[in-house]
Image (tube, rainbow, N blue to C red; front, side, top):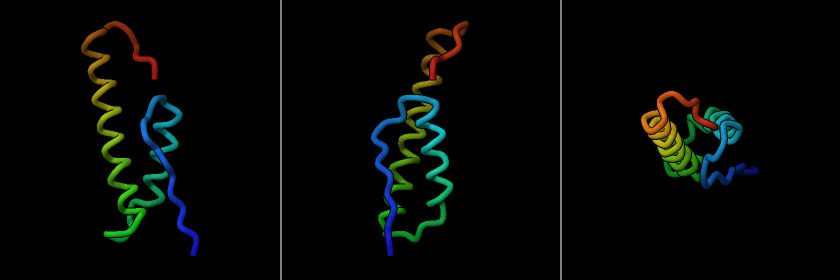
Amino acid sequence: MIIKIMDFRMLGSRIEYLQAAKRLEEIAHAEPGTPQAQERKALIRLFREYEKEIQELEVDHPHQKPRV
């Protein structure tokens, strides 16, 4: 059995966000306690951080479209 784990440390662009979203779809139903479940948890944390950063940019510069 081959276990595929992607290493996302930070979502710095829209492309990375989309790649991570695709990966999250692949591992959404991972069994608890598996490496994929740990990866899923890490990805969810990264999504929250990324979305919080985008929201902060929108508050700081409401008339500018965020560069993501």
